[in-house]
Image (cartoon, rainbow, N blue to C red; front, side):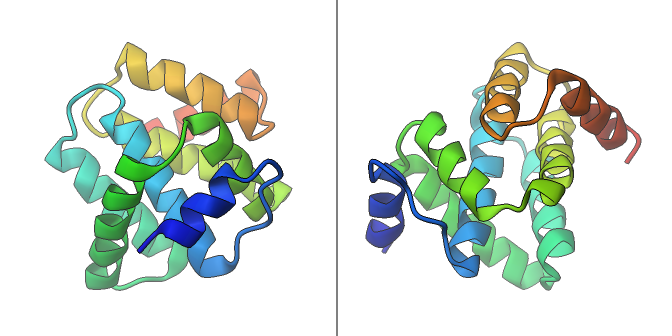
Length: 144
């Protein structure tokens, strides 16, 4: 099901993902962040659904379906470095701050965890987002 997307993510030079694939890639990254602490909580699942619905204008049912696909993709996906690079190519520079805020919102849904913090530091760096801008995104997410 995800073979073409996995191939594009593992290619030496990942190509820009088409919109449906970039939505799935983002959803899978949200799932990866949520699972980083070893506790994929209902609060994180609900937050992922809300982020996807808001970011992509989806109905709750469509957001849940996208998350379900993303859970399967995340389990099969290559390492976070390649995965995030492919997502970076798919997300415009001006949208990366809101992307980081969405990632923080999911990580904070069930409280802060060192593993999630560490993964978010890696992801922000790979997305070209400074530590300062990531901290601003975190504060915005905390205020949601």
